[in-house]
Length: 264
Image 1 (cartoon, rainbow, N blue to C red):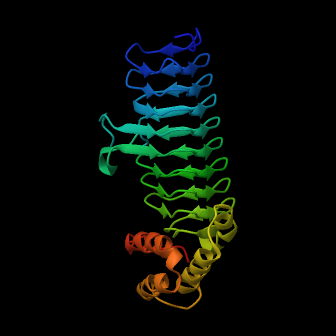
Image 2 (tube, rainbow, N blue to C red; image 1 turned 60 degrees about the vertical axis):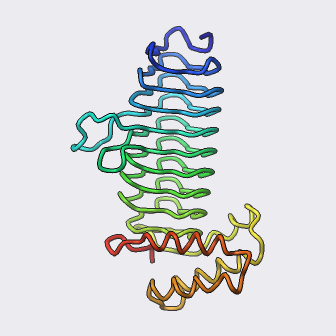
Image 3 (tube, helix red, strand yellow; image 1 turned 45 degrees about the vertical axis):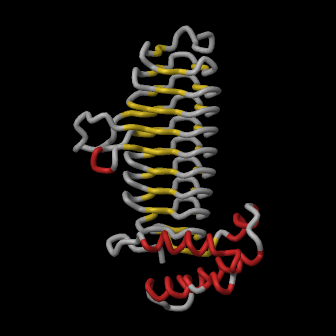
């Protein structure tokens, strides 16, 4: 395979498409599969049961597929699955899953992941996200599509971040962040909704008005979570175009636990 540098060590059992390129001094283990068009930079280690899709750009000095930082892990064949067209910048660490969390760490498609990002075991990242430098995700964190994490964002284990959300630099999340919410602080609190991001993604004025009404129900009217859910559920009658957005919010809120709660 002419795309593999002579100093790279690629196990004979690894499955790499003939179009994959591998930089100097990179090590690729026997259970790794890499799809067409993906480039792997110098000095990377890709190990474990790791599957990487098509047309990804993996820069130098990354560690992908190492065992989880979990004392309970005992060598089980857990996985890391990375989709297509992701950019993974320098010094990122993505661990495989653990038996206690389903066994798989997942990254979707078209994500822009900057330097020094850590994805712990059983993290699930959607598609079209942007993670700025030094974003750190603990085990079992879930991140929806189109989320933007500011630099040095830290997310506690089992926390969920809903689609289209955004965090400010140095945000520290201990609770679930509902869809569309922008958060800031240590600990993070909800500050607004990501209206500018929604406009850039083509949300209509009616859909944005519905998101504003969701924000009022969750954060401005003194309602309990159950009361806010009922009020949000009625919004589709007023804003028919926003039915998918209402469903997204209600589906997320249905998974909120008393132990974690939502950002306030």
